[in-house]
Length: 196
Length: 196
DNA sequence: ACATATACTGTAATTATATACAGTAAAATA
DNA sequence: TATTTTACTGTATATAATTACAGTATATGT
Image (tube, rainbow over all chains, first blue to last red; front, side, top):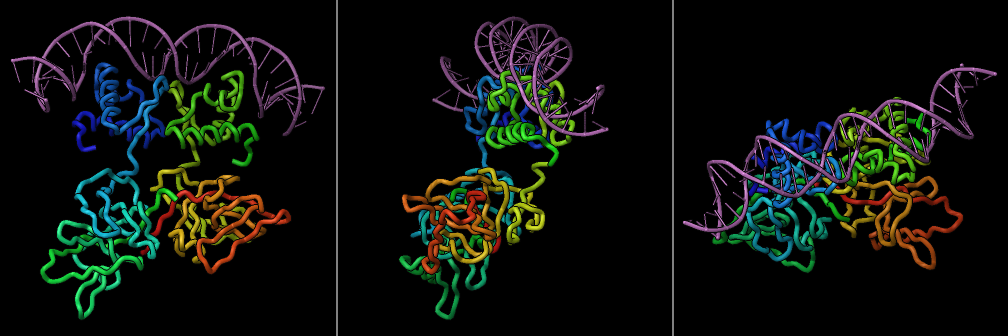
């Protein structure tokens, strides 16, 4: 989604706008008129480019046969977080999410990978809504960074120090010592499960 | 909406279906094909009737120029279901949700009460996105009605008959016998958890 | 009883739309 | 430097789609 050119983004936005306000996609002629192209083929070419880049789909022979490939949009969906033994997570926006059904403010979504939070009702592949914050209360579920790895765990703090606790008996706690490069990226405020 | 004839409802549903699965409205020819009309004008006449009755709008001269009037405003969130009342009846609607983050089409959200599906990662107070349907595949999670009770359970069907299975060891299966007043209201397609 | 609405088939014309082909030109990439 | 990609204009055509007109038949409302 990030390798679109400025013009391609304009065309993409016209398609989205049409869907929003009309309830159906635009024709080539409509795109051309809105963007002041003098040839409908300019729109056609851009559509082909957008298909090639995977952001839309065409239904050949069908009028207004354009489909958006994107999921949702507005809030960034960051690359998967390991919910098991920490897997390396990349700070890389996969796609954007466009409606936030959660009441609270969400800064980004993370896709859960693994079963370590299963006893908290958070399953593999769930989307976790995360509110960015640097500190957490005892017992909250947080997105924590340990060295270069990002992980979703319950945050526990007492006299013995900080522990990151999995909600799954077969996982053991991670102890955070002073020498660790540790930080809290945010706290989980809700989840979305798309496939049941 | 209640003064539509049976055929008009069919046409209306074809339009809704097309919007859901294709992302754009159908043509007259598509409607005719789906409903097995031999003339496109049958579809055209029904469209005119639907416009007259105020449930859709036409955009003259535009291909696929059909807009739903009432719809899309929101998805009802069903709280507790009053005994015997239709599930989406006004009395049961807790509020209306104006964004659907789930990829699939959702007819209503149901607020989960109790812990019977906890082992499927569905917790008390979760919102379950439900797609209305009358039948379900073996193993799917369904919203079922038994007499006056509406419940969320896993649907199991074999030679011994139909069972409604809770995902929690402390709950026992419900056996559906022939004398039961049983029906499937819909199937669960996703969940939203607002408070973690 | 009579008008109007429902529910179509069938034909046809006009317009809407997708889409290929032929170019031009600048920018990005190999 | 050569090649590909981007970004168009302009022409043309087959087909997709709307929509009017002419019928037939049954049902419903007044």
